Length: 228
Image (cartoon, rainbow, N blue to C red; front, top):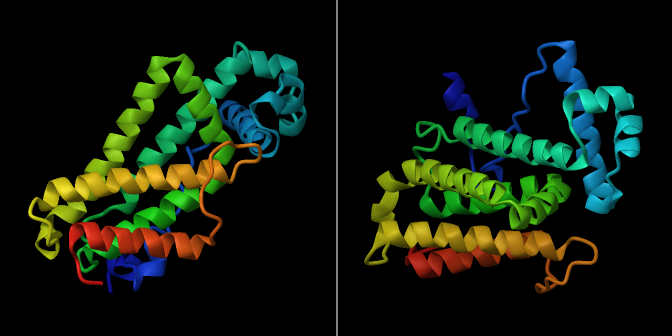
């Protein structure tokens, strides 16, 4: 049995249970920088953007102010680096996880359900970073453009494995319908993730994650006209 065959998901709940790909730590300097970024991510998750200070970051990373300023000009530069690292990791994780051969026998509905599950898992894992990304994107069009490119890469990778399966879709415009459905699912997941952040003004029905996933699957099946 090949490695790809062993890696093939067996049912819907296993889909997109991808290993998150971290940047390699090749030398001491890279490891120091990574620790500072990890500390910033941890503080973003626990305290939000306002809770991230250079003093807290260096203490949590076991580093010094001198080391911090060797890598980053200020807090904003640190947050930019955190957001950029996450964008790279999303791209690499998706690219490595969406091998068409691995997904050859998986249905359109299972793939899109798996996408929802992965987006929820990675979104919760990176909730603080996502908040920083949204704030910085409002201030800097380059950040917004960077994440738009990441989203396009994810959609393109998805379509590579979905296009051979479009005969499963009953909608009269199957490709356009699948592209639109991916965008709807992405927005719905983002709304749910934002609603879970303490102090958020985003409201969503109070339901378990499993119920949310089932409703997204039912909506997808209905719009794409796929018997489920």
